[in-house]
Length: 434
Ligand SMILES: [Zn+2]
View 1 (cartoon, helix red, strand yellow):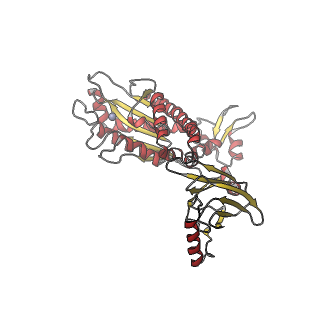
View 2: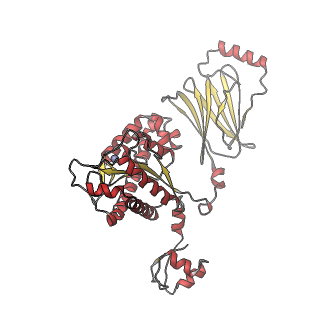
View 3: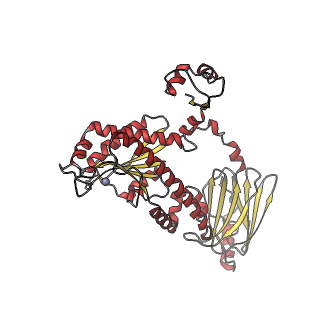
């Protein structure tokens, strides 16, 4: 799309400038922003004052016309910021007191035109929403869309000048958390449909806020922070898993809503639309609440899986997920869990935690738990979700060989994929199709 102002001569510009200086038109278009999204294109005209406007649509070719009165600037439209396939061009004409803006559209749409009052950082605005019906149709059907990886952000607790807790024989917590995190990342990266992102890759300090930012930047489905516990006496032992407390989550949501500029990173594209008006704040609140509920449910379920796996190989300090107000667990938008793999202050566990084989077994448990969690509750657009849809519930009269034939896989593959000891299957049994 381009700005069609070529017909304006230098002399014309000079005259227009003269008239706009002399006219008493109080308004002026200051900038034009175009925000395309998958199903909507929003065009925002930033204005000096509240707009007086009328709008109508024309066909053959499809156009949207906006007539603004009591406005100076005439033909001179500011530079466009943004682009959209739906808008072929934006043109303008006018005199010292009125302006006609024409949007040349690529297809017939039903636009919504409305004015918005100032909300920092924006002033008066005229907004045009163009529903993008064409693009919706162009989207591939869900079944053939490439399925994405589930992203696990792994945070090795502490680092650099922050050693974390120190064991009775001088072990630093930061030196235990990193190898466990590394092994876990390796296991996750071997898993088709899963990808690990390391928050800390070496022995350096990262602020706790930065840790959640890394996870958010990578659009992590889950943030797993790895720590070792400590107490003033040597007796306490065992692992525990912590999740964000509801009170902390509610406080954080409130705090984030105060920082309007953060809506965008929290909510993705939705925020650009939401933050345009103070009146729409309740909408941001709703979206954030939904996101928070999802995060907390996800974290709690994942925490339970982690405890179930850890309980098989080490003692548990707490059998249920614990709610905490810890720094790394403060993102209401990213499901986060904090795993205390044991007590570094307990001499026996300190020794255990130092051993490479124990670290590997801890990482394997975490890996199994996370995989199990996402198999049960895969994000809708993930490979895990796609694989899950390839499931078959055994009906009367079906045999393994019949199903292998129907799904075009070998009996062996079907048997191995479902970890079947033999070829007998029962009615109602759910088989995963490789
Ligand atoms: Zn720690």
